[in-house]
Image (cartoon, rainbow, N blue to C red; front, side, top):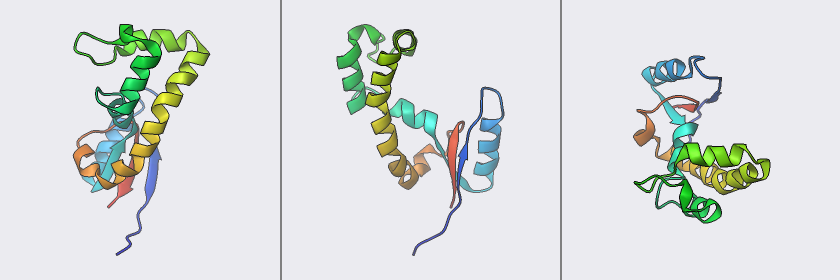
Length: 121
């Protein structure tokens, strides 16, 4: 059976109500897929983008527990546009390819909300 759905992209700056709107959508029965969560997941240890980022920027961008030190990495890439583009090239393919998977397996993400794409089930 092919079900129709409405796909909504929810965007906005800090403190503009994205989380509140996402919670309202969720309460109405919508599936919320958080792009911020997807972006963080693709850089977790064990993921291909994680290995590529460490290979590109070195182990100095890691915290003691082996996760990315987002502040250190941010300081590097926001000071150099070419390095930022390189980071984006390493992470965006994972985020983009994960998006359809996120739609199919969104039940594990329904408790997370913020900058989101939303699908009515």
